[in-house]
Length: 370
Image (tube, rainbow, N blue to C red):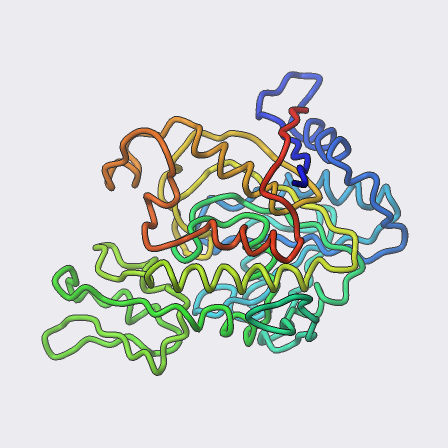
């Protein structure tokens, strides 16, 4: 069995080793400096964070990455694709404004922003998926598809559809065009538990597809002929009435994400960094973030996105749970699997298993501290 190396650094600093210095050392130790990037256009794939959410990667963490890429002769740019749901990143105009509002300026990061799939999310390239079981080609945002190299910068956290979000999620879902996201989400069919619904209307207001309405009894209902499966209703419901699909839908979506990730990384230099900090229970796509479930652990890096994500899952599961968080709301026993406990209808392991079948990497790893 192939065993990949995953490198990590904790968040302790000294006057001689501030965090940017530690991050630079981590990147070099994990192999970023060994990539051939001279004159290459290098996509730094990141999630800019929905305004109101404060868990996203802080812009100053981008600067050491961009600086090293330029040192290697590369031409870095920050990128993400537009969202499927309504919000501040639904088209490129608002997306860039949101990114700048959250601090992703040229001065802070050392590079400019290109929205991967164009003004309205329709600018994509069909990339082949070798060995795909769910698709033969992926609709990937042009700025990523046409880049010469890809470096993913990933906030590691929980996710209501895939269990957690890390490198694979950021690449597969995050690089897909709007049509690609529709394909990835179409297996998801959220539902409303009528007994728990208060009729507050948050899900109605936040459904970009107009699929959620209130019935004559004042309860939310979903028209699945219109539903895109984005699960924003699940994220905005404060009463637990909106529920994600059962695990089989999560597993299929995860496998499709794995295949989209394969399309993104094949045939070009790639490198991946997970920031296991502010480990919130849900995605950064929402305009709020719940309290982190564990204390900040550190930054992990590897050329292997599968090993990287597995190492981060293991690190979160091994860390003590923080009291007063959603874990306690859900009667967490104090040890064991955290993301599956928070989102019991998800199956994150299916994604990584499928990644291994696609030869994207290995769930077996050696952890090296820098």
